[in-house]
Image 1: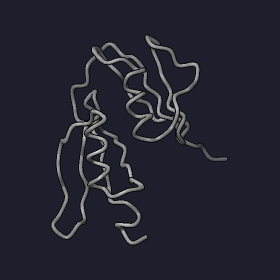
Image 2 (image 1 turned 120 degrees about the vertical axis):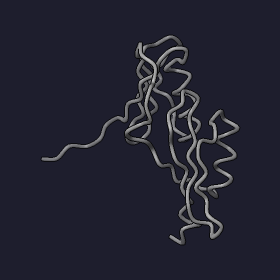
Image 3 (image 1 turned 30 degrees about the horizontal axis):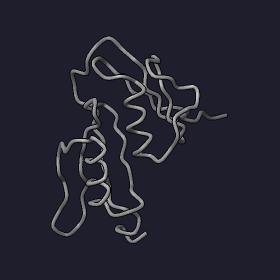
Length: 125
């Protein structure tokens, strides 16, 4: 028998709230929050596959993420970057190349890095 990834878990330290960060990622992924999620909860779940779980922790992030998400948009990479920045993400590193390849590293509102890749159409898939 094998294991499956059920959740990807994010630590959420003050001044951020698990529900606020989960709402951001719910918009990114187009996936709903768990209906039992309430403001002020110590954890919040985005019902994606795998789920994205946000848990309150006391300590702030001090180092670069050891694991991060790569998202592939249904639209162009550049349009998705614009959409995510409008939702509250921040540009961290831009690895786009003149030939259209590459990716963009953003941070979510709490500073967690994630990358936006080219869409399947941009990859010719």
